[in-house]
Length: 154
Image (tube, rainbow, N blue to C red; front, top):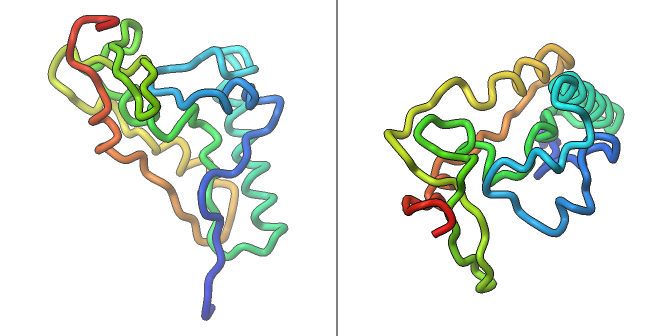
């Protein structure tokens, strides 16, 4: 394979999975459960289904290296930070974004520790559903630098 092909960036999430209109108006820095259109008890299975659909689309398109399409992410920014211990995602802090607007961000409340593998389920579902080479897009730890260590709302 001289020039292997692969998807660059996120694959669009299905309209039955996430409220794309609401998502287009924000970049969640904290958990944004209200974006998901599937009930919490069925969300993981729905995200698995969306991942499989993304995999099949990439295979039909003839891509050599397949990705999960980042179907489980509310945003690239919050995926890593909201998976850590020591982060209070229920009582966020506030920072001013680059447009001068206040936005909620995760708040550090204790030692930062990884609770569990962040992308493992994504990779397992991907690997189980294609024979092609796969790639995973890890959430970047430096994105957690956007957290706030002051009191809630401050």
